[in-house]
Image 1: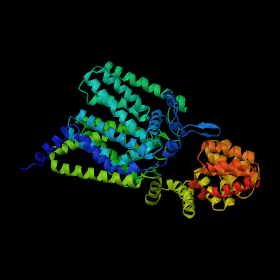
Image 2: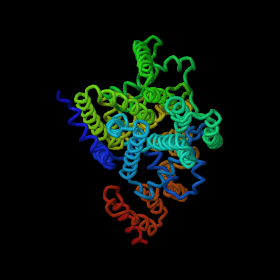
Image 3: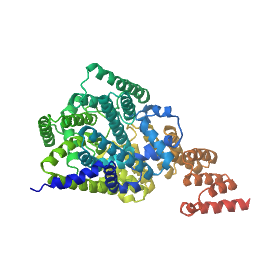
Image 4: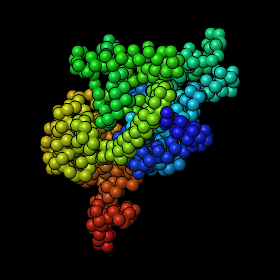
Length: 612
């Protein structure tokens, strides 16, 4: 009887036995799926964490990176409001990217892509190590490399921490297994080194130790005494303790600050979150940037479905327990899933995110290798057809997500709000529309954002800016006065005062305007726009010396700002210093003269100089 496997196996084995072929095919297919990312932009958190992050643009000592917490540290009620995230290796990689590419998002995205490829190659080697079958490892790795749920980690630059933690985690586990089985101290030392890099990339790296423990219980061929095992753990424990001490010193807390729900509530809804994550992995459709909260009721139908799903998963685990590798993969998957189940609460705005699955997916892939192995032996033709269909589907879906969701912030916001009805991003979309001066649409989405998220201060202040820009400063002031009693960070309070001052300025109430604008720069002196507003207000009352002083401080923060340069020139003009006004205006690139009104002011300054 004809057996499809007799035909295909020699071909596939020949391909995979050649050392380079699996890597070439993985590279080719993943590149095709991620082509759109190479022309993408910075989006969302990429802007504050990378594009506008002065720290990565300046040289620093290596030690200084360990004194930096991840994210933007703001002040609230006079005190630092820590992010609670301690991932010092990330800023170092951004600095290396900046040195290599400049501030080009395509370069940063290319680095993420290369790291994803490297992680996929290492996963292939890891599966070969524990499965000893390159064909099975190749198919399983393709499923990971092309899985659409991973696009968020790869194409959103500031999600790089997930890739790095996974890469170094795999290296640490790989070298530990090699070192443990061969009693190689060099490999064990390498494992400890990569463990250090993993935890300093993201706290998920701490899970190396539980996975090593599971490996020794379920897979290890070396049955050594318990004292040897404990001794091998000691370097990992010491580095872990050092990490937490550094974290405490830098961020002020052992764990990420949060306001989580009651412990029992978090435990009760754990199956619900596990079910959500399994759905994203095994039924990846409608993928986007999820904003998921706990169900409003304890006895929601989705909760019961999730309990049933977990029971079914437990049954499957019991059935495959004799397969030690499958048992190791399933147990490790649930262990690596633990940090994202909110049992230890985080400060994230959502309970579910695609990027958080990048790390646990390596064990889903390992488990998949066992099912692929079983089905290839029983029905190779059907298995090969299903695998090819899945790979093509994953690759095509990843391409679509990279092209239409993760490529630019405009595309992202429109997809989230229009297509997925995700009101969390309505304020961001409104802000983009405001920049484009599409006032009617911007106002519509600001109102939607305020209605859906009345606690979000930024939506109010941005809406107030729209009202001022459209000639309604009185409405803007009334809107902002409603926020006066809300708790705000120093930056938010600075923005509030800046917009209040701008509103009064438009009403020609300069005394009130100056009072608020001075407070704006006191609350957040690092914002060039606040200094620009203050300088313009001083200029309006004829206090040109203070106007120039304020504008110069704004220029120090934003040296290329045409608006600030023009206001400085206007202040010099008001003082009768026409030559200096001309000098400042000439420093503005010629192609920007017409659209910014520079030429008119320059002509007036020249006439003033001639009349002296």
